[in-house]
Image 1 (cartoon, helix red, strand yellow):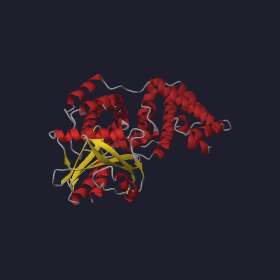
Image 2 (image 1 turned 135 degrees about the horizontal axis):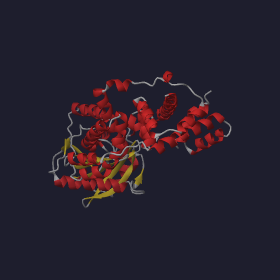
Image 3 (image 1 turned 135 degrees about the vertical axis):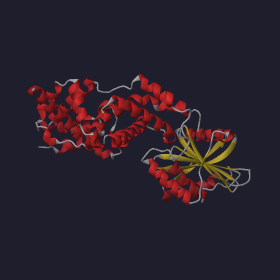
Length: 174
Length: 249
């Protein structure tokens, strides 16, 4: 292996460490675990670097991060991966009140609502809204066909809105 | 209650993922569909809230330091270390390869002459991908490409088309490797290009295929019947191995 490979890794892959940490942070919902898993993912990426043949380095790394997170969850918190969003817990509302409810949102409430989404919805939202990934990249990272990325995002956004409306309802009541 | 167009296009539009025609169609639709307009506004407001909240969390400086500290001097050279799902495919192919009694040896850093040659091969491959450099004779017909080399090379260039196997011949070219003129055949694989460099080699004896990768390019080289062969591409090793077996037959 080329001795310059390490320099190339630092140049091509390491700049995406923030994205790697951010994805791990939101998938694991814990900074400490996210640091450990992001570090492990970077070291794995380094070992696999021979299998990287150019192209989208960020998507390549985030795919490894995502897989490492899932492995971590399977091992340490298997119940979390099973979580499905229970729509009956949240009141169904029409179009415009949601927009109003969200307009008054603070960071804390948004953050909590995002964390409460099931992992597969959380990951598409984080990739799209926080990392700015394209559908093609999201498809590659989450190992789904590109055609299903839009519907996953659409459902994830709907559920985030429902969770926000519900959390505002709670706040008003208390 | 749910508009058909909304389900099909709204989020794609919001995310800028629709092509120009579909985006224009959706904008036209918005003028007549209050439901879609309201939903789009609602989604834009959600996005604005998400952006404002600045939820993206940067990696702590200590993490960056730790990663840099823990990275070994150079990555592993094992071809087995490919991430899933490629790992499964690579493993399956390697098994097939082993069954065919064919060995892949990874070149270690000691072979400096070989490393120099592989660097030159990769340079030639990269150069060939620049616009207008790939082919001198553009043809998918082996009976056109083969005679084109006659008179240009002092050896008969073995030219075969592997379209049926997924590697269509795209043409041929003359190139220069280590000061000598060599034949280059170009094969396609999906959207990727593969260069096959061929030249006569005086050293006697056949050599088994060897492979490695560098700078994001994979190569396989072998010697057979007094000819030196080098395959190089940005394709993964499994794909390249399939072509290697076809050429070496």
